[in-house]
Length: 208
Image (cartoon, rainbow, N blue to C red; front, top):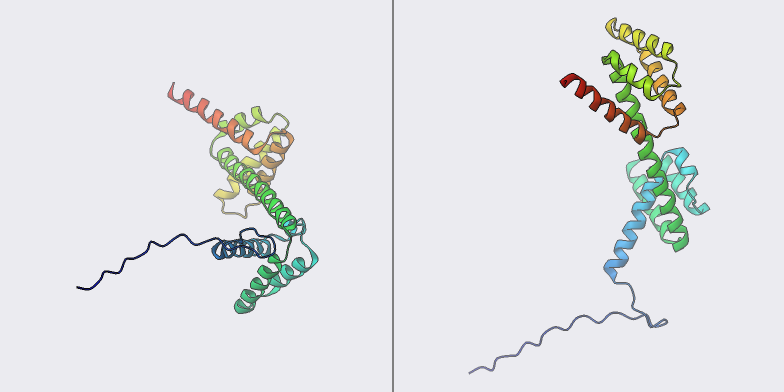
């Protein structure tokens, strides 16, 4: 009879200790995730609009690397430069990296609010062109708006659409709605809420 070999259960891997500090070293997988996160952060910087990029708190070496990456159009050359941006990112201190993340988060928040505001303006313009009653509701919510100008822009925008003319008044109506919203002192979210309320009242009246 052959003797059965007893398999010893594997014990969990011992954490690797740093010889100098005595603390656990980060695992290789964690280090890889951190490197990837910094690489991604660098790519986000390269893809920012020019105005937003100026507001990023970047050390000079990183700023130069990012600007070079934005100028390169060759695919392979850009890929190599983005890798270099990632290496520069890994040389930053935790404080510098945290400041960049905070600035990017702020930019994303501003972007989201601006996008919502523009969408509201576009929806409002479409409603004004589609329904005469929409202007009454709009003027009630934005009493500072020039009512006569609004009526003229709506009438002319409808006419130029019917005659297939360039959308001059269509664009001017967008600006009129934008300025009226800004003059009212309301946020895009407040205005959207008012819009929903007005739609609800109109639905009630139509169904009455």
